[in-house]
Image (cartoon, rainbow, N blue to C red; front, side, top):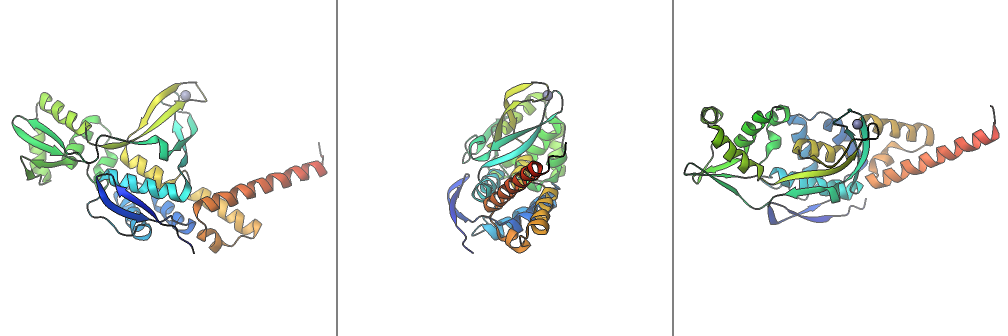
Length: 287
Ligand SMILES: [Zn+2]
């Protein structure tokens, strides 16, 4: 089977070149089967198998921003940039359907190659975007104060030139005695760490609430969106079983399809069914 390859460069290391190749529907089914559960293990498994199968090599020490960049590129060459998403209204909770164009709306904030330095009472602390995905606690942390503690622990890179040791007990003891002024300084530095943001021009179809500056900036949520690409395992099974059972497609051929080919088949089939239904109604005017 013909497999196109594309060139990309890592945001944190623009000289690092990677070749990527789109996934087919069989591989996508495997992605969906674990993407539903955003646990540390499923994300790790997902990313590892994606990198092994669709990238020419697995780069060492990938940062968060690199993961998101790579997955967005893979998603774009497989499906195109447009992702349908359900966005709950912050006012009335109604789930609005909207389209995100990940090639346009996913923006990197901050300089991906810069190290973020801050001075804390004469000590130089350097932060950098890190591999937060491997820290399950970030997935479950809700309170903003907790988020700062977890972010600090994971993004501290060096203190006075010495690599931060990531010793939790020592860190917690240090964190507990920080003054609110020191916390403010640290929080300011963490805020400058480069991160991806998806801008959403939000309008609620139910209550009319609008927010042209809505942002999605949780890296785990962005990853999940890029992995699932607006699909669920349940609707994938519904579509494929209909194609196989009622329209004589072979499951093997469906699995070998590239995603944009699959979308074309689904579109053609939907139009065919619609046409048949219309003909049926015309020939059998019952009521
Ligand atoms: Zn609403």
